Image (cartoon, rainbow, N blue to C red; front, side):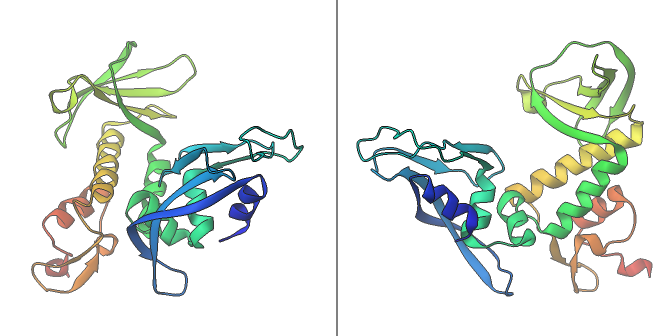
Length: 242
């Protein structure tokens, strides 16, 4: 365990392990078995499960007493994220941390983050439709169909699908810092698909090429984002194009 865990425990809490649920690469080249973590008061009467994600969490600075009441100590509180607790407790490096949060390597995360920056994508969400003035209209692939492009009062640009996702009430909504082109939106949808597929284990970053049989990482495929995805889905590395 690291400094963050020690600071949490110094406030009157303690960290406990539960059932194992994941194995991620360790800094020494091996693997670390990750177990479900929970944080409890020293009296054991209150316990909070720690999610394996980047959601924020807060530990008050007052020290907890044996009877479950706060003693009024003057220690500073700690504001952190659930994922940061796992990273500190198990001594994960950036690659192990990325595998914990996203189920893909830090190499993939850095590439996708660069692609988001390139197209000025802020985020994407699924929710009930919002009303705004549409400035343009695109037809997008990946099963999304028609989308409207508009702008909020705070300057952000919004892209919203016209039809619900999976016959539900929710639509896909994406936010950009500049007016997105048709290709920008196509790439944003591809990024969303890749992140979801990796997180859900639908596809792996590494695969055996159907033609040459060599083990390749999907980022070894040459070409833009759309081409990488298309060839990855066909399990082709591009060897026939060399």
